[in-house]
Length: 412
Image 1 (spheres, rainbow, N blue to C red):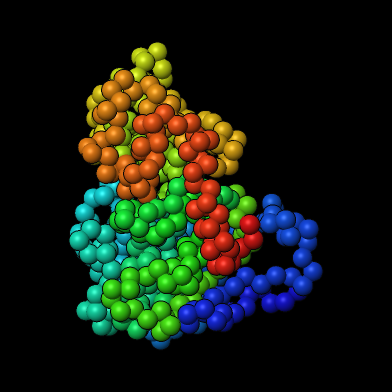
Image 2 (image 1 turned 135 degrees about the vertical axis):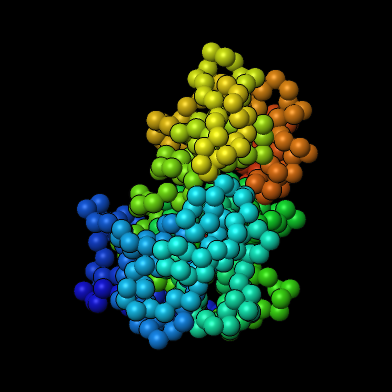
């Protein structure tokens, strides 16, 4: 067998991809896209021999949060111990420590453990400025994503790439497995509904790691063209995962955000998050966020819970009100959904809610931003079944899958 890893230069808009090599004689399991069940996936961050030489002697900026770990140590601490000169930290939604509420403005500050400046890139400022990068030679990105369009880390990734191009800085992305990477499903985003919870015409679940998604952003020229960006000038290196395929069942070592406390919530997140655009609670302010849903007007004979003020959800929807609904914390998500994005719970909630005109919050714009257009909201109002709705996505999903395939680093 060849050396464990090789760095392969791909002729794609100046990108360098540190790719996972394959044995000359691939096993039947490899061909089928199955990983060795006795082996553990290695993240890009764990393969320090591949990227430490690229950092030596450089002034480095790190985009990171609480998920940026190497074993039991934070990436920033690990790099500092190895003599890497880190100048500053950039942080996404929920902050560097991952404890801020969803959508909460996070102030820039200094990290108490290292004294390094932390610059928030969520809110009024979403990408590094030229002044931020004056003393920086190289940008590093290491964030655990969950593979869902409205999870804002991929929007932060895009802005980070754009800043690397704008400021002529090389970029290294340390890839991590996608816990929802085994399927591609849901409606595609209509560019008219572009926002920070959805910037590109991809389905709700797009089945790609951060590294693969970055390749697609560049290769499809989906970066912000208004800034006069030249992707041909981008020097981007992706350090890929080892022993991982899109069928791997990967358990996250750290919760990716305050209200995704376990793998059950991560697997249910794609299907339940659209409740954020309705009057229904999805369990924020309880111990089962994104694992249950309910409303005070649902039948009282159903399962019940009451949202409270807790860290990460200080003012949850329906605070202090008993909600009646469904507990999904013990179901087999993949079996229940058929390993796809599911509308069943959203449609059930709409059926139970007595005042249909007020099921969607406000004018429905919040729901539309998450769904990617106003089509799904109208389909629900029209009483369409899940299968009828799903059929309307098929042309868009088929086209996206062709695009996606060009940028995969790992077998499906």
